[in-house]
Image (cartoon, rainbow, N blue to C red):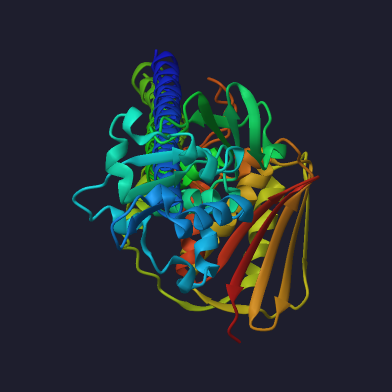
Length: 497
């Protein structure tokens, strides 16, 4: 039942993690798509503004107003006719005015395009196609004046505006760069200008491929029957930079959710392990306590039911059996109480100079006598090795290690004492290979026993090595376990004397 619940929780956590990742991925992807569309709109706006400002600047440079200072027809004035011919022949458009001698236009007043905006009244605006038809002949074609509507108003003043079918690419690029920079957009771009569906001009078109984005200008300043298409790249980098805060927050949220869920899973797993340890401990205690209780009960029943003649020898034997079993019960209770004392940090050590060699020799000899099918070897570098320790607790701690090696280890156990500077190293190893590295990591935990199902072939509560580790630590030492081709316990204690 518990395993089923644990699996259900594991599946639920997996689903939550997957759902969190999916939602965050969808949210980031949607933000990316929205950011991409927003960038396209901003580029569209920048292109329209750039073309508007380009043609406004072009109109300022290519528009002039001419008025006579004296009465007379402007179309018959020699200086005006000479000026129109120079504009036609120069190939520079209205820029030629910058190099004309003021004496050549002394009878007229020339006003630039920007200044014309401030005039309240302008008479007779005339658009000229520039070099395709010279200005002088254009105005001559308008005679006689009285047959052309409003031509009489051109007697003293005219406005000349030259329109071109080509783009000044460097100038247009400056306008585009300024508009993009104002919106913090850094892209590589290309464009194609078409007049009546035919490509008239293009710029940087080598970057155009299937993956570039494009937009078309909707500027009202574009010439009639013309189009301007701009192509650009670097979109992903810009969109990601703009959404970097959202991406970071999303990543933090994902990490936080995953970490919390795994932490929850770890806690649940730990609780599951504790529940299993509790059940195993209860099972072990029940089994361990049941045996001496049953034996003592049988001995007492023997005195009561099978000793009607009151044989003193038989009574003594029955009582001896009962005492042995009660001593076992007392020892087990004391072990449990010692564990509680360790957890409460109330254990007081009565330190004295303890000779290690005699203590270990007696323990080894005791286990030799109790175990006939295992070989125990003991060696020491020196015979007089002392450590400041509580003899009772230190002996119990070392005995637990030996007992563990005898119960669970191989058939050959080696015990050695080495002296290193101010430290004493006690090594207890056996050639057993039943213990895995994963099990070794938990061997010093309270109530932990190597899983063997429901069998109780080896007695114990799983507190011996936990007790040993705590006693060694309270003595200022350490204990390590290494599992490879054999099992090695290494105890290090501070030396004195």
